[in-house]
Amino acid sequence: MTSYEKLLRENKSWAEAQIQIDPEFFSRLSEIQTPEFLWIGCSDSRVPADKITGTQPGEIFVHRNIANMVVHTDINLLSVLEYAVDVLKVKHIIVCGHYGCGGIRAAMGNHSLGIINKWLRNIKDIYRIHKDEIENEITEENKTNKLVELNVKEQVMNLAKTSIIQKAWKHQNGPQLHGWVYGLNDGIIKPVCEMEPGSAIDPLYVYDNL
Picture (tube, rainbow, N blue to C red):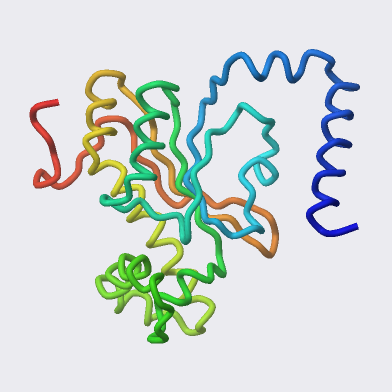
């Protein structure tokens, strides 16, 4: 049996188990989704949103990319964000990074990685701005993990800079923004920042015609 065939077999086993537990599970799930959360996480296979939060299908709307970035030119991310906020009316948006992130480590180095260089450039800018703070850390691991936390905070702020979030804050009084970091070594999520609806940001990024 090939590795992909094993995935199909496990899928059937999982579906059968769900029906045994709750015969109406799939018919109910197929009719509507009303998640309370949008999760913007890293593509790393070790950080599955549902597993580490103990949630079920339908409870979290998920977007993942390398190093959990919120980039203002990323139409994919912005489309997910707009749908989650305007249609699904999520109450919380979580940006979740993880310690030991390979994307963060790569952004701290000088090795050319091809097209990914353009993506990592966004993290390099954060590193440059906070370089003194990061370099105060003693070990390379601590330096990487400090940038992981700073990156999460920056991405939460990037959310607040979008017209999508500002419009929702003005008309819906939500959603609340959260920045978390997941520990691969212990499985624990550490909150590192939070923004309530209407939180102040640099006036340069505030839209006045929403």
